[in-house]
Amino acid sequence: MKYLKKLKISSLALMTLCLMATVSMAQQVTPPETPTESTENFSEKEIETFVKINKEIMPLQENIQTDMVNTIEKEGMEVPRFQELAQAQQGGKLQEVSKDPKELEKFNAAGQKIMKLQENLQGEIEKVIDNNKMSTEKFEAIYMAYNSNPEIKQKVDKLFSGDT
Image 1 (tube, helix red, strand yellow):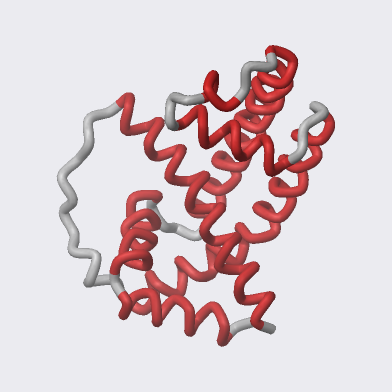
Image 2 (image 1 turned 90 degrees about the horizontal axis):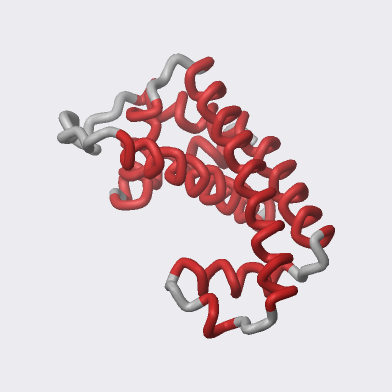
């Protein structure tokens, strides 16, 4: 039971990471807007919808996780090494972590394929959010509150564990 809850929470985290990547790409194109609503003022219905959306997204995330692992392995890499290189790349230290051109080639090939998978997932996530009549902005605001407000986190976690 605890494993299932951890899986759900990690799936929520992965989904959010993908969603936040979409948002960050969008913010690079458009100027950031000033937040107009407090993260404290979400209705019970909005929180219930947030949980419902996350439950619908979980199978999508599980599929994409499997696809990502398969992609990395098909390129001849192990997942931990790929993650190590990805972290080094984010920190601007990829060349320090690997000097092997063949490894870097495999890493880049896998990375490009994973980016396509993530783009597809992001589109599917946005459809799920839209189909549930919630704006992406509202979804993001609730997610941010989930991470920063213990009261919101408790409400979401309670709904998550109560319905499953």
